[in-house]
Length: 108
Image (tube, rainbow, N blue to C red; front, side):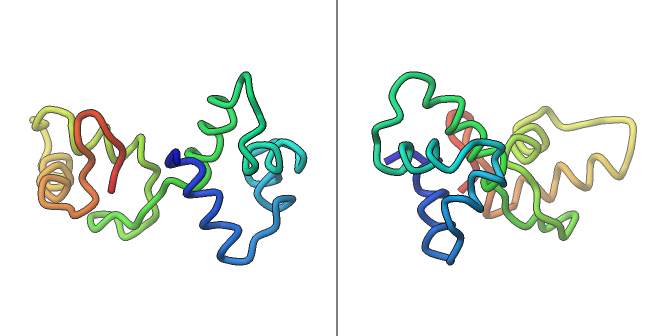
C-alpha cells in the first residue's frame, strides 16, 4: 500500500468524501474512486503526487505550523547552514525532530 493510498484512506476514515478529496487535490471524484479501488492504471503517479502534496504534512516543532514533507526534507536533510542564527536554529531543531525524514523516505 502506497503512502498516498494510506493518506487518502485516512481522509475517508476521518469523514471526508471522495468528492472532497478530489477538490482538495484538483482531480475529479471518479479519479479518486478509481485510485482508491486500485484501477486507475497509467498515470497513477500524478494522482499520488497530488495526494502527497495535499495531505503529507505534520506539525513542525520549530514553526508550530503544518509543514509539507518536501519542505521538511529540504530543511532536515540539507547541510548545516551558515551565515544566520535563525537558519541554524531551525536546522538544529530538525535534527532532533521525531518527524525527520530519512534520505530515501518521507517524513514519519
